[in-house]
Image (cartoon, rainbow, N blue to C red; front, side, top):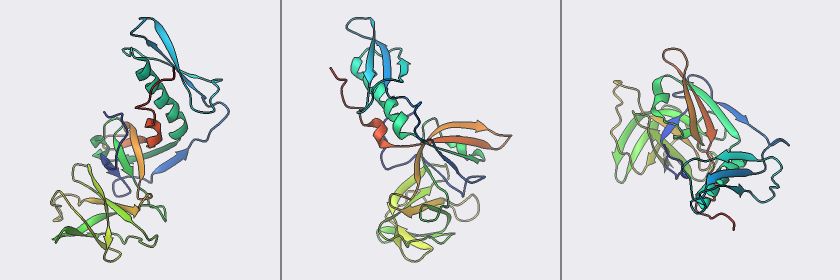
Length: 246
């Protein structure tokens, strides 16, 4: 399990080529009942007493506080950082997603970093790799679906390996609506029908996927799994290297 901020590389890809039904999306808007602070109780290494550190964002007044008790944490700064991450999650993790797959979801552990996709116009698209060919300094790929390049600017594509892990994203260079090149490919795709071909995830830079963290995988019947997901937002981790106020 990984809890730190993530980079550009994803663990897995889930999109309509794999999902058994459409991706569901929900946004939880703010209400008057939302928390406006976090208090973290821990055992301080200097006093060996229970201490509480307040974790606040600008504008928080602490009228409705989320209270956390930590075991095994004895450093005030560490306790504060944990509390600040929780406080930031209150603000920046408001989108939830859901989908179902066959056995594919078993690839993902708790909080795996996933690139999600659907077919909303102007955002991401998906397809299956139909052809590939090594070229000088790049690889030519053909998609089973035509991709929309009309947004202009940089477009990105990621490739799902056979084991479900994600490769990329890489800048895609258009040849036509079906074909493009990427700078590298670290495996030889099986396109002979012995297994499912690699899945492609494509779109304009900044809209090519929904970055998310897997929070739950639950069996549904004998060969299906329901997956619960929350949006990833790097701002949740903004205080990971900061220090508690004096």
